[in-house]
Image (cartoon, rainbow, N blue to C red; front, side, top):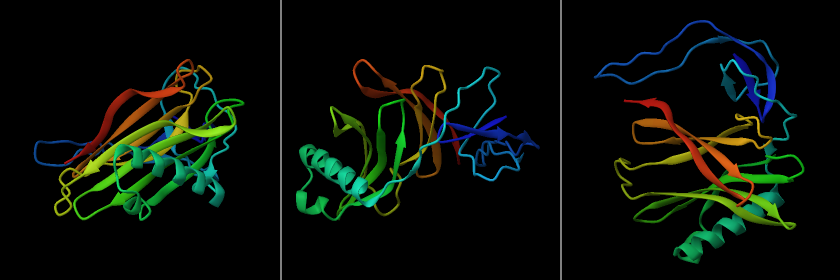
Length: 208
């Protein structure tokens, strides 16, 4: 099993067993312990027989200026969507990351913006990339939670990592969305012609 972080291969790990179990009355658990002795923490693991290309990782936490740029873009998007600007100023940028997704494409900004009101929570997962020297949003995915008491419609999307899965020189994005009692993964693929992202795969995960 190959281990990656930020698109960079960190080494090989051995799966030591499996905790995978499922029944009609229990939760699905697909985890497994591994043997790995590297110094850096891997974010993704692959078991494909074909070689997945590796490149040096540029992933890091976004800096204050980058967070400010990301915040301005997502607030503008949400205001155009229809949310009150005063309410939007109370929102929070969550786990913003700066990373290069394609060679010579510059640094992309990836993160989420959460806005809570008395009736709902709007969570906008977004990617901002430079187009003609200016940052623009190239991916927007909005989840709206209206059940604030029991959270039965909760959907919280987090960025996991990037990897050139199909060996085309363009890193795919892997996200995880957490629901009320389950979670699943999405792989996003970039279209270089139309310069936008689409879902290439949705599934996996587990739950109760």
